[in-house]
Amino acid sequence: MWERFVDGLIAKQIQPGYIILDAGMGIGLLGFTTKLLHYEKAFHLHGCDVWKEGIKVAQDMGNAYDKIFNHDVQKERLPYSDDYFDLAVMRGVLAHLTDEGGRFAIKELQRVSKKQIFTFPTTMTHQHDKSLMNDPDVEPLSHKSNWKWSDFKEYNLRGFYLKGRQKQTLFDTWMYPLLYTLTGIDKRFCRFTQYVVAWN
Image (cartoon, rainbow, N blue to C red; front, side, top):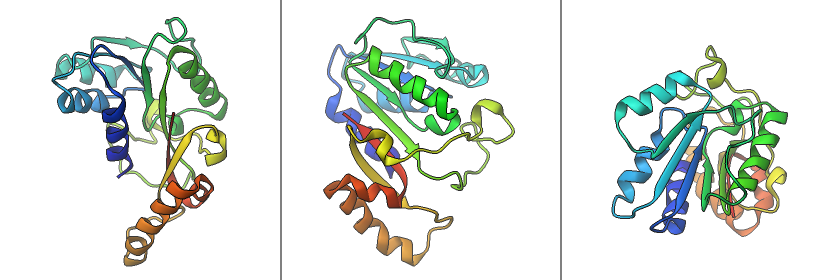
């Protein structure tokens, strides 16, 4: 649900001629989805990641990105001038960075882009099956941090799923729409959610 929400945010913002950064692109899922959903808009898409295997998958799949480069977002300054990008997206990346590295990456995205979209988990206990995006045995894909809604107080926020829940039950099915709505009314309700989307 939160991934579809991000797709919706991008749809509202993207314009022909926009230059967009997918920071922490992994295998390029966000880039390919965005290009497919907005194929009629002539926008430019740059992607970067520290995980070389993921970059290779994105390159082998085709040319969704106008530029792909190897880059460690939690240690290295992005090679772009201030406000170069119209929009920068970091979807599902912050959990894979250290606390300090995540703060550095956020500041860099704020520097190089006019608008940003971030997603992050609020607990270290959320579970993922091993995949090309999450794997505790692969250093760039392991989870190293969690974040609080208050780390993004200056952003618009929306919370998803009840914090600390491991499996979907009838209780979760009842609670989710209420919690999702409450976070839209007051961002402080995000403290009870497992995932948060922040955007400006």
